[in-house]
Image (cartoon, rainbow, N blue to C red; front, top):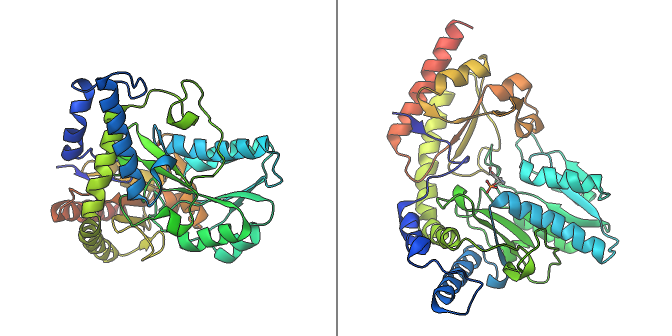
Length: 380
Ligand SMILES: Cc1ncc(COP(=O)(O)O)c(C=O)c1O
């Protein structure tokens, strides 16, 4: 059995979500933008229902929901869209502030904007991965246009203090963009209460389909479209909306809200068992804050072993992630920001438990790490 413990990379689409999507592929296949006949009107109604479900799930307004292909597109639209709108209005505020531990979907568009004359400040984080609020307060000033801080980190699961960041932004007149890809559906998140102006969501991180997500915008936040064409999504994201996918996103969010608390409690207990057993093996370091983190996340540095060999051994039994971006083999910028060396980052394991995870998978993970570490420590 291969134990799948990589739910931060992606989650399976829940069978109930697949069922909710089913009629919208070919029974009801109308284009929601046509609006001249029944098939189109049915699709438009399904689209609007999904929109209100997304808004309700994050404490936003339905009219603020812009469906996208995922959280990467949502972040690009939010960041480039805000910057372009500010430029069009010749605003004095142009500064952008973010954290070193953000996802590339945020860091890369921000770097792109920096090359086009938007001053960018990338703040370090504390050794536990949390933002230093004093440092943030010092970085956000009268020239700051936008602050981008994610809700939950995709590697170390750390939960940033969103309410404090939102209050700080509001105080200083800066917009607050939050990448919610790993948080929405997993922790309570009410964007208006938290002072979030723009929130990104990804369907495949919350047991929904791949290829769909949303940017939820607080009404009134100026945004310039980044994709032009048929004027869909209030002119902010042209292109025919994929009705089955947005129906799936709405259904996934409803499901996620229904079992969120029980799921977090159950997975938190399994995660704690996993950590206690791994810690007992010796030489293990917890990457990230011990309690301000997603209940289903654990990121562990394994001391005294070679990361490449560790992951070669683990991959026979476990689907987990390493502390390096596999495609490039480069060390994780998140673990580097916590002060981990290249070797320490490579010998780190990210576990992401999920809705279907049972004690058997956790036992398998403990046995796999135990076996691999024993072998590597025997033959260094
Ligand atoms: C924190 C975070 N932001 C953004 C993304 C990108 O999401 P998507 O795959 O929906 O584009 C991911 C996915 O890895 C993520 O974990």
